[in-house]
Length: 485
Image 1: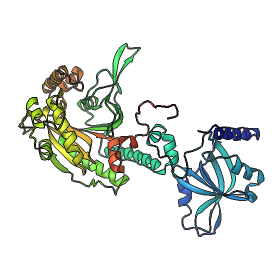
Image 2: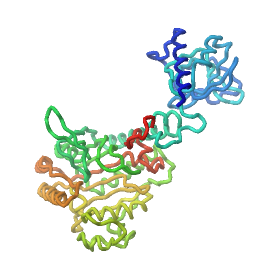
Image 3: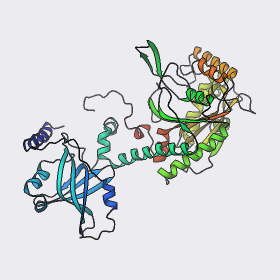
Image 4: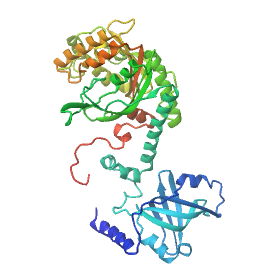
């Protein structure tokens, strides 16, 4: 960035101070959203002036004209409004200051009256203004916005400043979170908070982030899921609970994975995986209708349902029920995927993620998983070797995972022991043995259905984005190669 540009802005900053103006004041009360001002004057005839006063504030985005009259554009979160600056209204000193000492990118407050130009654009005729924050760096180039992807992700504040689409996206994300909470609250679920720092991680097959608590002198883990704590709430009698918050998994970066991500998990006593499938598709359909009613994906219920066995068979001609041994499955896979060092459940998951998942564009439940892939799901009531589990997919991405929850403590203990054997074989994502959770189950947990829904991926599907980095405000990034990156 040109040092001359930075120096020129600092010189204007010092001139404001020399004129007795604080370029960083404490407040500017009474501000109206731009959208409210625009909506309040719909239907105003071109060429009409009013005596209705408004106070708005935002970033100066454009300026046209000099001399005795100029037009400026001011942008806030809700929209953009045109300003008219006239020397006969502002006075020569204030008019000159607005046009010469205020830069594009500065945050300003405006007092003025509403009018409609001859071209039909609602405008505020400025009679007073205040500099609220002097911008010491120029904003991104105004005509093309901020295009560089790396810069957009690393400097999201610039992306939000320059690209209206980015602002709308993250406003939509906030609406998704609000709509999810509203749906669950109205269905009788209680929102709870469970530990993020956990003495033992669990609830998913993933590697954790590890930290150390100095005062306790013990190792702690950033949670990979909220599942085991939420099911302990079910044991305690809360019956319908959910938590919406951050989980952390020490895994690679991709268009579908960020090590820090947002999930909502909800658990419902006296329900099974079919009941919570109905609830999940109703939840997503409701959110989609509120946030993105016309998208490429049709979230209308009911969604398609297919077994995992049939889904893999359709795409690969491999029958995983007929090839229950690792070597047999690896032989059937052949050269299509790497198989060395992969366990049987890992190979099944590879087949699902590589061949099935990309084909699932419209909402689909993939049902009935092998027990080896699901250490916390209840055994299938009619299919030996399977559990009552589904994953929901759309846009070629998994968005949710659910079980009829395992509530037999003896079976849970056996599942943990099986996971320990997988860990001994080299599976770094195997679930650790959690004796406290087993003891909680020994208190008695009612039949329960549970769901984990990825908020980031849901937002991707609702807003037609192909990368999780687009929908996370500040995604994890590699170390920049130069200091200004």
